[in-house]
Image (cartoon, one colour):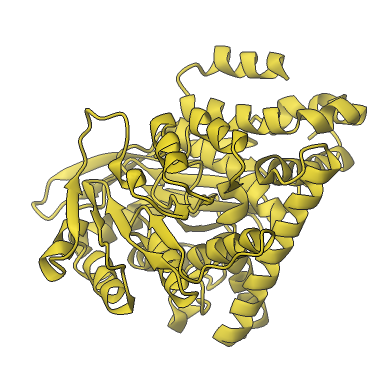
Length: 449
């Protein structure tokens, strides 16, 4: 395994995020590989870390001043052994090939855990949606789709939203896909309810994260009632994680965005959360505006000179990092442990640095990796595809119940895999091993392709 990692480092030394993601999985599955010799056959390890396809393309678009702008677009199709690629699209200035390869690699195992026949991929652009008008957003999305539509389809690659790609963007993308392909299909998920979307799809990643965390707490005879929770982010996942935590009786005291965070010692209730949703989803404002409406809260601006995020220094029982990759550093992890945290459940993709992950795994706390805990989004994306194929719309209660069953199943699968390979209670190892086994078995069945 060390040889494979060294090959990746030598070939793509600048791809830090991808190397980090690969190392985490390879370290986790070592007990499996030590016991199972046939997983060393047919260069399956070398193949699973190499994308099946990467497409890079330019995206020219015209801003409201009539000036032509150019961004770079990507489509990374990582692995289709168990089904068509399921691609999350991210629009953010930080997007590069390393970040999308890491997201695609994580997606492969996350999708495998849901038990749905879906492969893994990722795509997006270094385009920054912040400050863009609706017309600018539409023009960019339409030109992005002019290339992407060549590579997606309901039986090839199904796209959905990630950071910077919400309901507005999915609408513009789907409209252009429909025009170019001359078909109305489930090639994109996260669609509007009036044109092929599913109830609970917007809430799924956040709700699923909380359902998974509730299963973890139940192993120690605990519930969310009365628990103080820290949540980072203020986008879709953070909003709906907060919503479900409130519903289950928890007290959420933080939310954040890229500029800073708010701490509300009284707790964020349903009315305050409704304000946050209007602020972020409609006004597209900054989280600092929260304190203007609720002066009992405190806003702290991010300081890029700091090696830690003071959000994680507040005393709480549960932490839900729902913002972005590597947001919890080693120093943040120690702050959480010193604050007597009992559970860390990742709502974002790989939000903990390797050092932070090692700290959590070394302590007697409950710690769930994103590929298990935030699988609810892709799970309900899969359910949206089923509804599209049946030309039906299920009731919200039916979708939510199916989501609960899926998240409970993922929780059981992680615990069983961890137990079977000598690391009982280790959700991190269990998630990686269970996902790895399903994908690699399929690859071996299908030969060298």
